[in-house]
Image (cartoon, rainbow, N blue to C red):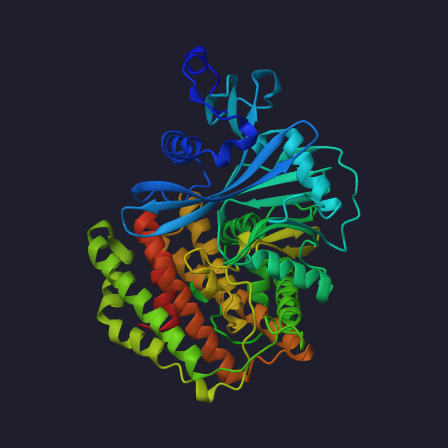
Length: 542
């Protein structure tokens, strides 16, 4: 619970002449709500993405009514404008409750509506509203206001509302668990376009019957003249033992513990080149003795599920949003423009933050700057005419944190795409190997995070641990790419031949590592060594 309701707040409500049922037709209410009330409230919310910018003004772009037996609620679409000359859109469900009706201490403001005292609240905090959303999805929402559309998925079996609660900590979206079997994700930050998470989830469930992501069970959207906006996505709640990131941290900690426990000499471990394909029986016994067999069989399972996801995403010949396509000049121009802009941005951040780095990180940063022409050349060397593989819709933000551990298996979630990208860019068809590269960068992170977080635990120099980490990383990659390629090709996914696969993997890995570099320098410079090591390894710097 956040702010307790105190007497002062109750004594000084915002007073409006209009009653609640006509609030958003009243200019005075809309004006005071969007400035005096909302500006103070929104900036402290976890889901508000404008914290690094200066708020200029908030505008109510649209609103719709949704009524239960006892209450009128509003879905409010906001445009938040910033002094830096850009804007973001947000969705806010709103309720007006008397003190006795409140289900929460988290209020937006005390108000008096046409003489009636009460509180403005985020409607999601009211059980009556959460039940209303559920019931509308189940009945596909025969609501009098045609602007808001509810959709019931074919896999929705639970038809009666029993209970609802918030799921975990509020992040960029708000998730509600219904009946302990379903989860409804309410998108706070919205786009004048269907959300990729909704599009892909529904496609995978209803068109492809893909079993390794949560089944799509329903959605909420608003139909505007400019396009459809996805407000909510309902899926089955998957039983799980946490995400694959936590799983991999535990595994890598155990593996590094084995260095000491098994008295392993790091400089005697057999090394391989990056992207060497490996069947399980080709992994040297020294590596199996050190890391154990289980971690490699789990990596094979993850590789299989990843390939199956891509086969499903590229497996439709009818829906043009999902049909595979070849490379062309337009894609090449889009890609190079995007990457050269991003690369220049990262160079500027690095040059401005060099003073924060020391030791190996500083050495690698200088190496990166010395070789910037070579790196830029690799980004510009994308020749689409040599590409024989196909592009498909991809996950777009694929890493260990987007995968749940379900017994011995894995479930893939969150198809919203890369947070820094525009909604249009997230829907561009790309090489499926870009997702594979994202997972490889995540392996690299798990290994280095383990070294950083336990540096006093392992009796080795950091340089030796980094050496062991790089060897382990190459074996993880080798086992994954062998299984992924086999499954993808047997499912008729056209990922190209070996030379093209290696080129695309190197290209996408470099793109991901350069992207990460900006994030680390801005938020935790000590970790900049991770993407910098990745870049050095991909570029084969000596």
